[in-house]
Image (tube, rainbow, N blue to C red):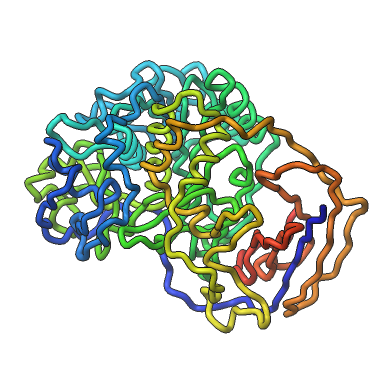
Amino acid sequence: MKILVLLYASLSLLYSCTPGGETPTTDGTTGNTPEVPEIAVSNSPDPLAAYAWHLENSGQNTFSNTSGVAGEDINIKEVYESGGKGTGISIAVSDTGVQATHPDLVDNQLSNQHRDYSETSSAYWRNANPFKSGINGHGTAVSGLISAADLNGIGSRGVAPNSKYAGFIFIGNYSDTESSYLAKTLDQMTGSFDIFNYSYGYAGCSFMTSPDSVFAGYKNGVTSLRSGKGALYVKAGGNDFIGYNSDCTEGDSSVYLGNTNTNEDQNTPYIILTSAMNASGKISSYSTPGSGLWVASLGGEYGDTKPAMLTTDISTCSDGFSRSNTSQAGFNSGANDLNLFCNYTSVMNGTSSAAPVLSGVVALMLEANPNLSWRDVKHILAITAERVNYSLAPLSHPGGSSSALSGHVYDYVYVKNAAGYYYSNNYGFGRVNAQSAVNMAKTYVFALGNYYESEWVASSTLNLNIPDKSAAGVSSSLDVADNNIIESVQIKLTTDHTFLGDLGVELTSPSGTVSKILLVNSNINKASLS
């Protein structure tokens, strides 16, 4: 077996492009109240369920200025009709904290399992209050997308409305040393939970490394939690399709193209990494691509001109996403009869939203079959994912012709591998399909076999010069004696190249399937990688 690694380089660095999105917005125009569609989800007494396009898309505008496209959702209606609600499944939401007293969240909280990592002493982390004055509404919105109750006559509903959640205060500007932050990172991977939802990440304009203990923590979770079947770690892929280098370098206003592979803790098979799609059935404008994405979930757009996500918000018009002092009147200002107390928002977005939608689907799968291992869940998600926006055509460089490398294919919408599956650096194996995933979970035959990890090392240290502006680049192959079915591959690359934003990295399988690991001319401002 041979693995071929290709490196590309070019001196073309800068381009002009309209930013496609960064962090989740906190405000947005609300548009006019749309006509309530006659759909199954709206047959519940929950008045906002009909506006949750991700549950059932009938072309709602969800208080934005334009409508979505009917049918572009997670295909969950029949799961609900058959009684699937995530009963018995517990989820840790490691985020900014959550207002667990919210009327749509209070009954589904695991009241003695909340955590507060804003505390310096570990003695105060457990069994804590998950909500403090001044915290961001992000975690409350994320929790609602998973576990907001249904049939209670208020608000909307979560993807898994009977699931139970615990809120962790993990994201925030706390005075942590490197060692204390690592200790908190490792601790939030543990506990008697089925699913861990991580709707956070780091700026993609630089390469972020992680200590070996982080990967050991993930490995421990998938081997020991859930009575050895393994916890499911669902993580947001990032909102850096186009970002600003100023996030990593002060005063640098240039833009870069993000990639999930720039953050090392996203490059492990132990997580399920998701991108975000919008209400029109396309990749969201901000969603970060990468070869580590597993499936696409739903995150919407910004909620002003195009629909974002309808979910819970901090219950006051002076905090959270919905505020009375916003310049944008309507639903998110408390001026709409359906949201007079600003308990909900229609502007939550990002892969931060896509992750909890996916976590909700995983909860429904585990409810349908509690014996699924972490690998079984990933396998079912890949098998049942819906191939959307399908094409095998090459993609043009987002930076335009000035950034394109002559003779080199930047990327493809999808590629077909030797096993017959289609994969995309934008959509993973495709959009999550709740009904298909739950149906397969119910009748799943456990046939993946044992899981092995092998380390393949080049026979000698490579010292290769990368030619400038060359589509041929430079390559090296690696012979592997093992005769196994490969589920995932990680590569470790060391280079002293002066500007990694020039490089493209490809991994080619023995059958000829090409995986684009790093896309050429990204303008990522990092000088070396080790």
